[in-house]
Length: 213
Image (cartoon, rainbow, N blue to C red; front, side, top):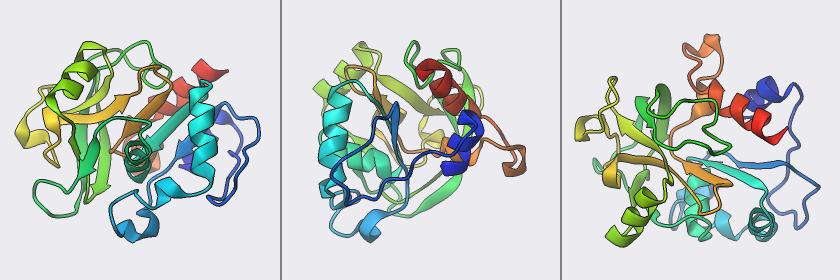
């Protein structure tokens, strides 16, 4: 994640220890993946109670952009910054492979570099990535254009065979009501450099930097 941000920003991001209680002035806060606390109790549940999270919630409420990837997405749902929950994968097994995503959102700071319905290829690596929310919440996410990414096949068709974890309505990433918080299970930071075999994730970081500049 640090390398992906550095490539797009031209300088390294500031690293913040999770036990800090204050943050400097920031344009963007990123919660990366990483199986915090070994996913004990429930994925992201303990990390969501880390001291720094109170300040992150406050900053998000003030409009600061927040990106949560994989374990970071789980933390965003555990804090209530995003609705729903991430449950065990449908297969009950850890999944690590490349997937296709359809860009469903438009006009937000995170997907601004992609045209709507663009299909990108990025990896997933998780055991608890099965997004769940009640039907009313799912309907609201759909009607408000807050589904940012959806699992799909190479042609952009959302379907069970392309869904690595059983997520409701093939949802891979969602936005908050204000549009300044994005949570997603796939790892765009793992496809930003040609050495990784694909650069489809680079647009997310380049787009964020341009939108926040």
